[in-house]
Length: 112
Length: 114
Image (tube, rainbow over all chains, first blue to last red; front, side, top):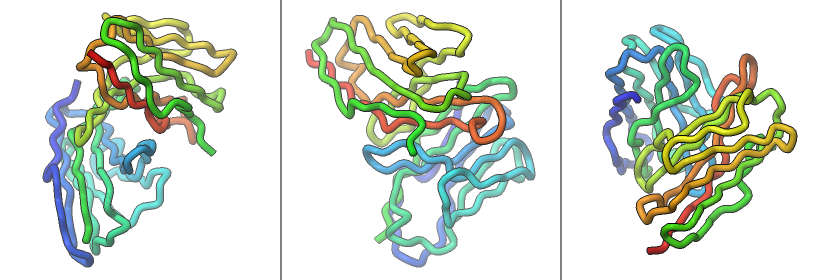
């Protein structure tokens, strides 16, 4: 199982601010993912990466961007936060050859 | 259209009894299925998985059953404990193309009463 860290755990921010949600994992997993989840709903994939310098958009359209400069780090950035971005953001990783994904604790974002 | 469905939003069982959580899927290309447990304000925790070449996988108190012809899987928890109270998500995955990613259901809230 992966050790995955997400910071901050909770964030309240005003509309128009730029924010970066951090995600790091210490297991050297090649594959990393960002999901968005609203209460009572399924998790929706918004970004994924299969390795350094590889990023792809997921199934759910998102105004966020990601980068993967180092294997262990997969930050997500919102250039201008809006109330519609209020949600829980979950980061996950998966080792090569495994089909399971292991999740971090999540970041709850509230945009006022 | 939702490819993975958990039609029961909630389930309540007594401590010590069996909990049965159900999940249906529509895409026959899915060949790997997972169950996750999620507490509020935390990330999902991987519980158990099953490949389509099997119809049962067991890990301690948790057993997953897969019925491919019915496109149905279930998670059995025996005996249920109050600490099992959480939201349970099933997820499905296939090889290649659109099914290469995990597709999640909407979750079932399990409440285990002491």
